[in-house]
Length: 316
Image (cartoon, rainbow, N blue to C red):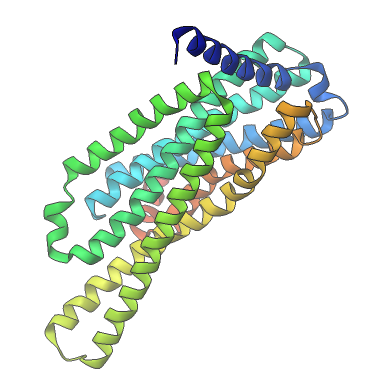
């Protein structure tokens, strides 16, 4: 590819991104939608505040809590940090919708760009972290005693840092040069992550059934007595992680289905018919970051106890 051709490709892709920015920040985008935009703004700002508060409390609780398995705890903290960022993104999203309503187009363009990049990085980090948790739970079951030797804290921290650095570079490049490529990346990334997690939890489920059958056949075996205690604790962490996975699936699926068609419809026809449905699915994606702290407190007893102690101390 010649340098001239490459420059023309880059220019056309950046023009496509500029087109989307102009589409979302225009007088036409709010015609007849004032009440819906107001409702969407209020919902996102409230959810953003809730996500920031909830994930901040959970992050403090995880720093204080010492009984959780360390690799799982590191991945959980990484997920909480990504959800915390999504909370700030929701405030930006609320500000963006307000700027559309008020016709402040310069502010709208700025918030659209910042919100878009930060949201994509945070959402991708959440997807990768939840997938890493499912792989971690499967490896803990398969490796048994070798797990602590293979999955070290240093490796998990390196994975957490890499999840932010790599996806940050990928998302910034795709955001700057090609909205189509980013849509393909999101769809592929989501499909790969969900497929990997489904495979891991399916393997875990069948392995647990096998272990349970073995314990039932030889209940007096001392090794099975130890296995029963370990499996009880392990099963709790697996089901906690599975609930996080189901919440993510519920929140992300509508966007994953609608986004490719909505963006193509917008670019090809400049139609505003899909504007509000598309914005609603984005809000649903953000909702996941508000649901996760609730799931932590509900499913993880150690976190629930520390959160109660933290909130009790703050009232004194």
